[in-house]
Amino acid sequence: MSTSELGDGTRCVRGGHPEPVGGTPMLPGPVFAAPFHLGEDYQGGGDFYGRASNPTWRALESAIGDLDGGHCLLLPSGMAAISTVLRAVLRHGDKLVLPDDGYYATRNFVRDELTELALDVREISTLGPWTDDVFAGVRLVLLETPSNPGLDVCDIAELAERAHRAGALLAVDNTTATPLGQRPLELGADIVIASDTKALSGHSDLLMGHVSVRDPELAERLLRARTLSGSIPGPFETWLVHRSMGTLDVRLARQAENAAALVEALRGHPKVSGLRWPGSPDDPSHELAQRQMRRWGGVFRFELADAAAVDEFVRRSELVVAATSFGGLHSTVDRRAQWGDPVPAGFVRFSAGCENPEDLVADVLQALS
Image 1 (cartoon, helix red, strand yellow):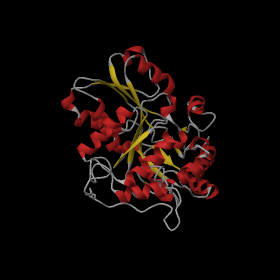
Image 2 (tube, rainbow, N blue to C red):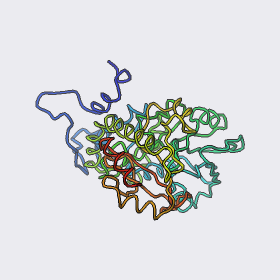
Image 3 (spheres, helix red, strand yellow):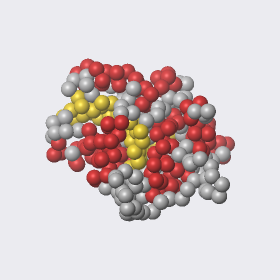
């Protein structure tokens, strides 16, 4: 049976694992090495130095690449993945399209760290307007869908086609959706980027990122960029992500179940406004999201009256904590205005964890009472 015929859970559990051999571990331990033995007849190829390659990286890259449908390259964080793509693809004077409502650190990186490239940067909301002049002369279009933190959705297939007509590459930050929730490469994207710090590793205890592409030449260019920059992941962290990926399917299912229960419980609540979750049939993005997403995640958003109301909500809750990440086992809230996102002071990004749905709903409602 080919991997494409296997279900999500099977691919997560078995992805990147070696063929079973008696007396060997199911998932080999991390390989710690700087130099590798070359042998007397070394002619190049194979592992020779830890900055260039590592068997532990290859195992996880194989697993994630299978889920994404492309060649995967690991990086030590989501921002390392984004910055590696931007530096590898862009040249002096290039035109770049960024989401003005996506992850704020991406915009900050372009503004503060890529000044020497004198880029022509066009910031467009996830919902557009995506007029023809947006794509004119552009080298790279970066989307984030569902957007973080607003959870708006744009049409990857349509925008990929329009970008390609204009001679541009299209990249998608797929962190919110996860490789199980959405496969941008199958929708026409050239590059998919993700922070695996979030749902893929899912335990809020390490940093990791990855880039997946279909084009072997682009994959080689990114590999060279990683090797020369030294932006490499640690083998132990890589092994931990691989171990954790085995439960991604079941974690994502519980998180989506909890998000659905909480959204239903909060709909119409007098203290809650701006409730959004792409998985909800009444969400403005639901129809499009349903066409291009395979399944839902646990991240949704809403607004309380102000920052003090959010603080009081967290203080009264017994199960929800304040933390600036998402996709972990624990349910968390992140008041995004404190990080500089252009959102109201009471705007909350809620990451539903893996608690029991009835416990979580009861706790959230009492914390708002």
